[in-house]
Amino acid sequence: MTSQMARWQDRIHAIKEELRELGEMRPGALSKQYNVCGKPNCRCKDAHEPKKHGPYFQISYSHHGKSTTEFVKRDRVADVRRQLATYAKFRKLVDEWVTLSLRLAKLRR
Image 1 (cartoon, helix red, strand yellow):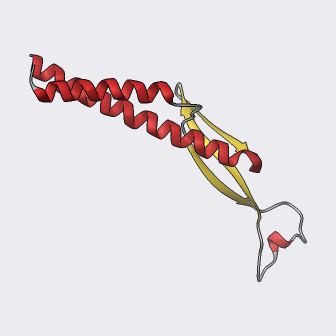
Image 2 (image 1 turned 90 degrees about the horizontal axis):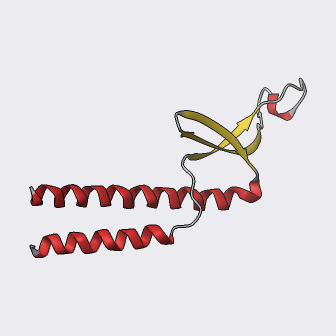
Image 3 (image 1 turned 90 degrees about the vertical axis):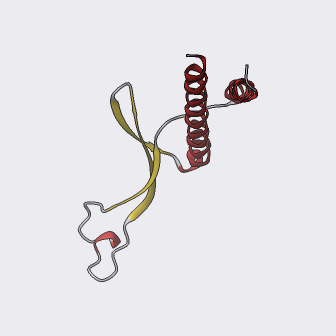
């Protein structure tokens, strides 16, 4: 076995350990939304300086082929951001694992 193969196998082992340590995660994107209400004399409809209502936070994601958008309460935004960051790390680690596994398979052919 080459030293490069050993390094790749060691890295795969390390990736598995990192994956084991990941916490809560969720896919998607968090966005800030503003809206205009239906009240005719509201500040959001001012002709010179309209001030929309908000911000309201939304998360949008697809899972099992279904797109979903949900409102996120302001006190949960930090948690959702952490979950999104964890999911991004998860995807990056899995991609690296697959890349290394393909390299190993190619060398073993």
